[in-house]
Length: 245
Image 1: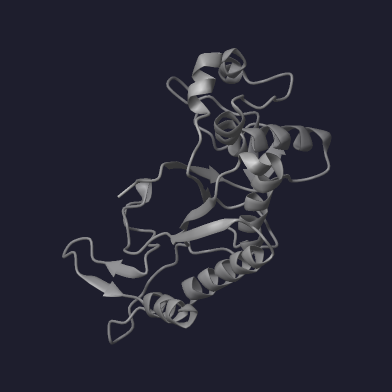
Image 2: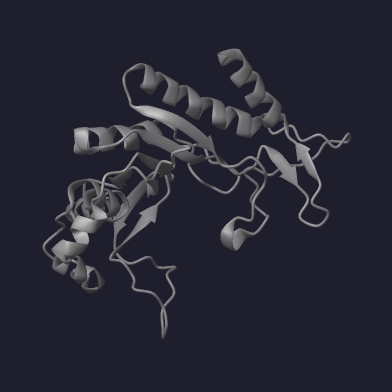
């Protein structure tokens, strides 16, 4: 059996929150940081050019060793994209960012809410179009240098409350998944080279700093007993896959 080697890149639509020149300038930098640092290096062998005045902690990018870049830019069998929620960029430091000794570098911009978009249970904007937009931008930017695409970590957190019979009817998650899969299916029909979609996640997982408080799974997990209960979304996806076959 032969293996395949690729990578996962977390990408997002990045837009300026207004037509203000400062918002637009920092949105351009945010787009480079989010969407091009990895992809440019891997697919073109060079880091992307940024604004003339880069934050000091990004200065080493301009001094990258060509030998290292050549090693980074080895061919891949696939390029996986973990789509993040779209970002609206506002100039200025994030007023909620930590300060003081040991605090991480503070960027000269921060994100603003999307007031016109619905939100998931954890507050993320619902934007099926954003996934397609990110993938389309990759194809447009890198062309033949881009290997086959895989969409990974596609999922949404919603509060899962069992009904009186213990069933979890996660209608909002089904609606979210249906909208995103439909958008991807239409894009693939129109020629977008996506060869696989992987959902986040089969079973509720430990979500970093949020622990088990933000479930994404198609199967509920009791963190104490480890009991697993398929949600309505699990049966829904099975029916979708059966219909395709």
